[in-house]
View 1 (tube, rainbow, N blue to C red):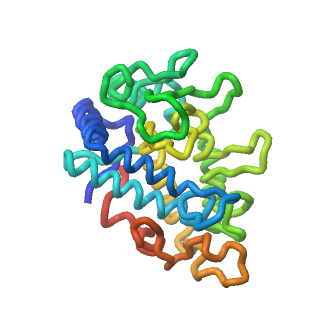
View 2: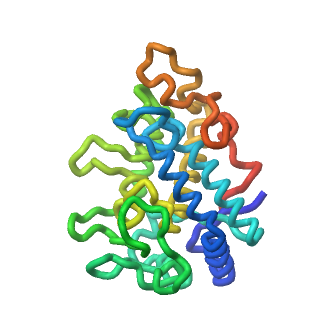
View 3: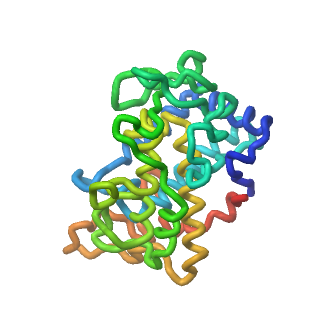
Length: 286
């Protein structure tokens, strides 16, 4: 078992080793495979077929396994590293430590929003965007979206989601107003609440973080490590609650075959949500 740390507590040596592992996974071509996988399994409510990664109860277990696979790739390069988490309720400014040039680099420049600082800047020659849904080979960011401002979620926003005693509810999609899963994933009713928590963070960062291939920005992993931590906090707060739906949906249910119940194997790994409810045999958070 290994440890996932708050990114703000990484030492300079830990940052250097983590960045080097990211760059080596990228150099090998494996990183772009992860980006493509995330794009492949980004299926929305309005699309046909199984919906395993987003707008669905399996949002948390699917991303837990996704992070574990990526972490395994990093640790094959350097067994001392793990994916740190970014608590965006605290480190909520462009001056936060993760945006320094020794870790993720900063905001994009004016005009094309290209990131010019840090190890993932295109100018450094080691981070070319290959798997994408838009043109452009360089990493982009647009912190806070000045043209249509958005703020990072607050501790109160997170607490509201954590207080919900139910994991998810029918129809198990982006429209549900109850349940921890969607309150954190963040598909809101519209207006100022259109994007909440997880989704709002993607929009605050901007650039590559906006699309289905959002892992192109390394901050994706930091963000989802924190999402995973919030899931564990919800589990501790509601020990008698659990993943829903527990049983396979009946054939007359419009979501049957699209939503993954507790024992349904999730692609592409053929593992069930039940197998991913407890992270403690893999890692711990500090």
